[in-house]
Length: 106
Image 1: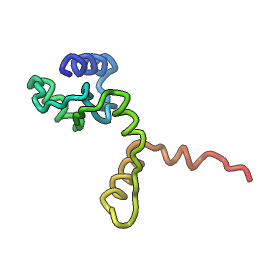
Image 2: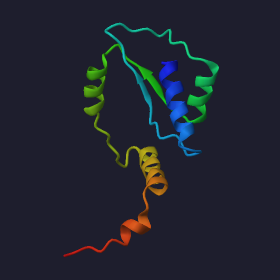
Image 3: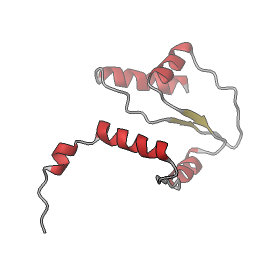
């Protein structure tokens, strides 16, 4: 894992001082599961600085991708924290002025 993260860190550094676009890391396995992941302080600092979640699974890469693809996210009035997060993400990542300026044909 550290080698892959070092490559991602180098790529991001070459792109300039922008926010990290990595949403998370899924460490896949080969049918076995190990919680003995070793990462360097540099990698740990990077993950913490950019608030990148890391999870591991015994599933292989394809099995993990299938499971992730089947996740259904629900936002409703019983989960106000999700509503707040969705609103914040829209404010941060969606250009509402540009979107609202698009003419609607009827």
